[in-house]
Image (cartoon, rainbow, N blue to C red; front, side, top):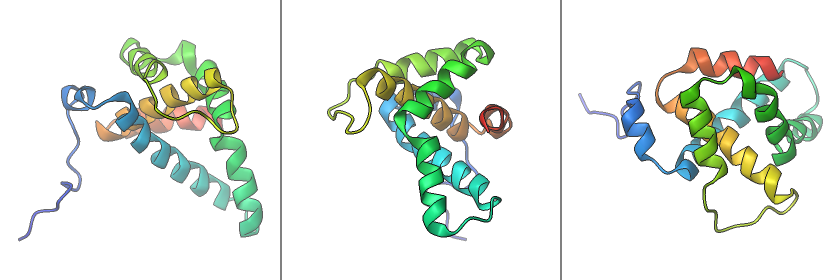
Length: 133
């Protein structure tokens, strides 16, 4: 039997995930969060063009910055550290439609989602994501 290239169902250890850059964690977290929001919005039975407009409200940097501030008191110490790493990451791009502070906090939020996803902490990830809906 051929092994999967990305190791389907193989989670990273926390140590392995911590070795990734915060921007790599945010890269995955962005995709996971976008999928979560799209799946949530499907329940609203909106036309596709409306789905996109609604999704943007959730995934823009300002909204993600607000989310991380909302969740801050509920985060575990390890989670706060991941957010801080993401927030302080040096990026080579600047936000087009957001201020730099919101962009940095959004990166921290996405890094947290990426970390939880990659380490197989889906229950915790969904616990946090469901709090923001």
